[in-house]
Every structure is written in C-alpha cells, then in structure tokens.
Length: 325
Image (cartoon, rainbow, N blue to C red; front, side):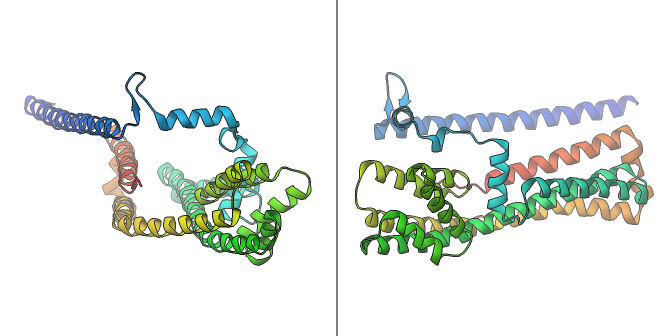
C-alpha cells in the first residue's frame, strides 16, 4: 500500500466519521425535542405527578394488577402453550412439533443437496436459510389471514350474543349459540369456553384463558371487557353492541393503516429482494467475476457487511411501517 492509497483511505474514513457524527447529532436533537414536547403535553393534560414523575396511567394499571391479580395479564405461557397458540393462529393442521421438525429436516436436506450439487458452502447455507425465511413468511401470512377472518367473525358473533341476551338467554347460552352459528376459527374458541364451563371452570377464567391462547388483540379486548362486566355487573347486551361497534371501527382503522403503509411495504420487499436476486444472478452467469467474494478476506467481509446492511434496512423500514394509534 503506497502513500496515496493510505491518504485516500484516511480521507474516506474521515468523511464517513463526519457524516455519521452529523447524523447522530441530528438524531439526538430530534429525540430531545420529542421528549420535551411529550413532557409538555403530559403536563398540560395533567397526567404527570410532579413529585414522583409517574404517569397516572401506569399507576392505575399497577394498582389494578395488585388488586385483581388478573392471570390474563400476569401469567406467563410455557413453551408448549406458545407453540399451541402459534399453531392455532397460523392454522396448521398438524401439531407444532411435527411442523417445526419437518422444516428442520427440509433445511438440512436442502443444505446437503445444495452443497454436493453446487460445491459452494455459501449456496449450501443460503438454501436452508431461504426455506426457514419462506416458512416464517408463510406462517405470518397465515396468522394475518386468520386474524382478519377472526375479527370479522367476532363482530357477527357479538351481534348474535346481544340478540340472544335480549331474548332471555344466559351468557353461556349465547356463547353456545355462537359456537353453533359461526364457522371456524371462532367456532372452536367459543366451543372451548362452553366445554370448560361444563367441566366446572369459572366462566371469567375460561374466557381469559381462551383469549390468552390467541394473538388477536380484539379477542383479548373482548375477554377483558366481559370479565370486568361479570365482576361489576351491568347490561351485557349493551356491552356486546358497544364492543361490536368498537371492533368494527378498529377494523376500518386497520384497513386505512394498511393502505397508508402499502407503498412502504412494497418498497421494502423490492429493495431487499433486488440486491439478493442480482447477487445470485451474477454468480450464475459469471462465477469467475464473483470468485473474489468467496476466496479473499475483503470479499468475505463485504458479504458480511452486505447481509448486515440488508437486515438493518429491513428493520428500519419495518419501523417506518408502524403507525401509533
């Protein structure tokens, strides 16, 4: 390395350090401004205690936890229960252990076949990674699809429950009617509530237990509202109508959010897939051109930096797609 190359490297590092420092300063300034504005709004609304700097929301939530001992929020699920919740939410026809074992076997088999067929260790690692990522994407798609279906069914089920309660049926009878009239996946949820109630389990605990076994936030909201109503008393039919109206509004808002973030989601997928596709395309049509990436230290370092930058970019764009409402 001659003197000119050393000067160029030092200049590049200095420029990078300067740009990174400016970026960090801008982030800190924005974060400080955001914190100051948040504190100002909290003081104007009167939700901050000046003596302890503790929001009333957190204090009330903690008092509710201590007074009621709500197992729905406090209980931690075991690994078996988490896998079962994942299976129900994704709609897998088999047990979670069998599905995960099948994915692991497919990944190992793809590694062996790719290594002996292609002869490159990089391709051998990429093949099982692609299988795992594809399986996880398919699982997330199944969870989202079942959640959307569950939300629509829950609105109809609450309407059925409200009419049944006004007709004189008890709450358990309304749940039994829902399990007969509504199809899967909501049918299985209310059927389990009725079966556990027949076995002697408390209705409130049964509703909370079933809601805890699902990723759906509307179902958990329904379980919390019904549990409070059973404890404090009130008109359950009006509660069902109010819950149906709230969930219907949340569904409309979620649809608006998906429309607003659709362009960012498409850009994320395109920007992540483009360098990966181009990399493998160049590796297929011109292997000698890509050979230094596998045989030299700088090339391997560039591959690592490429992977890290793609993952970091995916994380940043996922954060950009989150709307707080």
